[in-house]
Image (cartoon, rainbow, N blue to C red):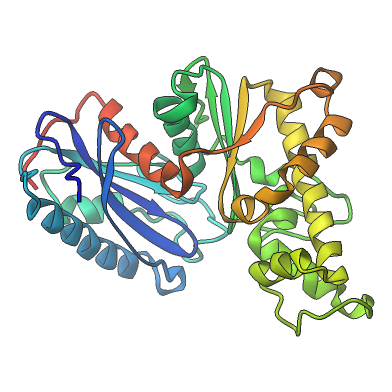
Length: 333
């Protein structure tokens, strides 16, 4: 197997914290990813437990990397954390995170700094860092105005304007998941009625199916399995009830993305996340819906594409956050 560790390049321990899983990897400044690992987040057990498990995962990642042909000792520049938010990047504290219950006003930074005293720790919102990755690696590299939207357990947004991350007064800018898409919609986990996240995320698909199940007696063969995966797969297989749910979700996604395009006018709007990948076969339908609802400048061309960086997009952004920080330098782990 090709060895991606390069002594001539900076390396970062990159972490991606989602509502479902925590992932780590070693990433170098060319964007090469190695030694990926993952564990379940289990947010209900609290941030201290998660931090202990994450620390073990980081140590394991460093250990595996140091066993490679070229030791990375003294070449790790820091630890970058991409996380579901809202989160303040200055201190890493969460602010009522809907998919990380009990983590409000708590931070990984002091815990990891004690565990890894020679490695600076940086935190950013996952979608913001995904947008940073899109403009740092791959086909959208050097794009100056880009929006990234992740549609997964939650819906988040990252904004790059004039080549810079837009983070807001306390780092919580980009909560695009809470723009309204339906006046009669479902509430998200923080109580926003009819928002993008509450009506197009993975949990939203399940809630929508549960809400409509008893009112849709025909064409329903999903056997009370309301998971997003089963709804989408059943739709592919011709289940009428599941297709009805998917169409409403597509409409909600299109409405959300239309509004984002109208507000920001990016060069490109990149989408990713588990729901996006599960519905990628319906992307053309989403684009058609957007072209009929967005401003006239989008009638002929809708600048939307699915990320080419795949599931590593937020990990890459977390690494780039380390590489761009002026205080990082090669450090012994």
